Length: 395
Image (cartoon, rainbow, N blue to C red):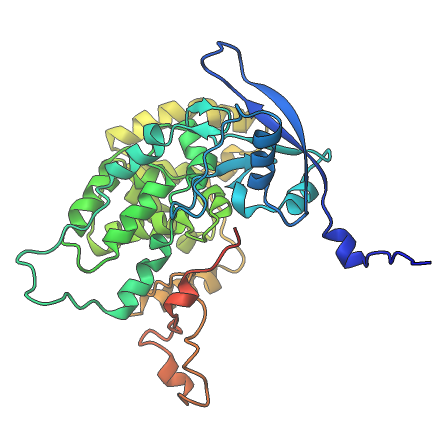
């Protein structure tokens, strides 16, 4: 009599099982408000959430709206929110999505900060692509053009590789807190695209681009450093890092003093930490607006009175601490860091996206001393190949 062998634990884990998808539905033609609907799909754990949605669409309800372009060279179109977090439906395994679920149901809804067309489909053109066009997303070359190819230093192109890795999925736009408060904010995806050209030595309009983005009240100084775009990006573009670099290049390389007082505000924070180790809230507004007697200072202080009054009532601030700001105990060490960095002839900016050394440059093949591996400023220079700079993702 033949016996049936039980599958191993690994094989059992790979067998198809039921997953419950809770989809947010919305049909503008029906006139009804958005609602939730659940679908049960039967797939292997390693299958993607997108495959689950497509199975529900194919087997249960063909009216489910989902945008996807897999194998059509338009990766990134299936961006959604899965269990409240933005991501690519094709790059999120059912099992991993289930592990992040609180109630055993995989919740899928459309991305935020963009109008919903139907179900999981959002109007990318109304927000995402409109903001992309705002930053002039193409090269503005020098004139006259070189007769031969324009040779660009390898380091310069490695630097912009991070911004070039963007697949325009809109995940960072979906989770941007600044855009929730100010829908006119240019946004993380568009500003990362702007750095792609500001960091390209072939572009001849660096200063003009930065002047425009710095003086726009919804430009580079409208970012609140919430890190949401860095967490959301499936390709490691880190849009907030690119925005910070746009700010530094604008204020330090081109001495752009914007009408939004963004550069003054950043310099005030740096000076306060150097002087006291912490921010002097009472002095921060005057230093950011051009001085105690500047008309902007009085206007800003008047607008801040309710906040100050609340802080005093709740004893988060006392008149003594507001007037006499204390220094941190290790202020000498903080000042030493400032002096050491300020003494460097060249500002060191490392794109944190590039971290690995070239595979061909092994210690045996290229025996260099530590002094040779350090740059002129004393900081290690990153080495990276194109393969290192563009991580692969599963789909």
